[in-house]
Image 1 (spheres, helix red, strand yellow):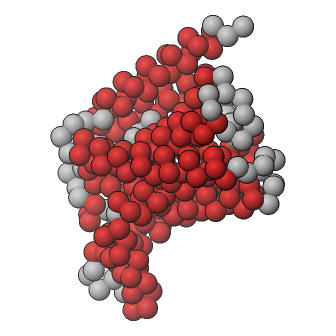
Image 2: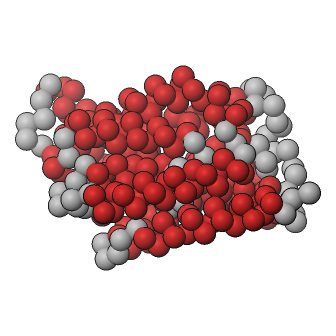
Length: 276
């Protein structure tokens, strides 16, 4: 397959799987391996992470009204040293709190996960683990609180859960939505908070990996045309995925994604068993 088409496919996979609770990292490992794509750049971790630029732009564009409120509100809270009963000021700082555990754990263990936890068998296992967590969250979560009722301890817990997405197959959106449900949030609030809180982490990861890529520390030569094609595909598919999931969880539980994860894990196991 033409490399531009491969980049577009990878971008679409990233955009959809970043926001649907099915794991973008896991799918970006599996797709080239199962389809027999062996281009060093397309297969690289650096390319996969840079596709997150597309999903970051999708978050900025889709939630632009929220960002226009939250960023000034967060800065105003610093200036006044007070929330003054302003929900936007409080939400801005709740989002910031979620960055702390993920940022610290990512900084400490990123290199380990880059080199040791990127196998198809591992993805199959973590897809099932993530499915079990979502299943428990659906059944144990009270789902009776809106996003405005979330406290700082709950936000920190959701941020800590997000760090588990370093394991390919767990899913950043899946684990943070599940943590939101465990914290009592309704499904739409859990999904919306998951999307908003992901922006700083995605931006940080993309900046870190982008620096490594363009200073040649990543070990691969950057191909701008492939990056542009993949990022644009991730942007479009990411916006569609955000819109779909927010609408879906208003009316439905997450069982569809739980089933998908288990079926995908079974397909991976069968594929592995058939390898020579």
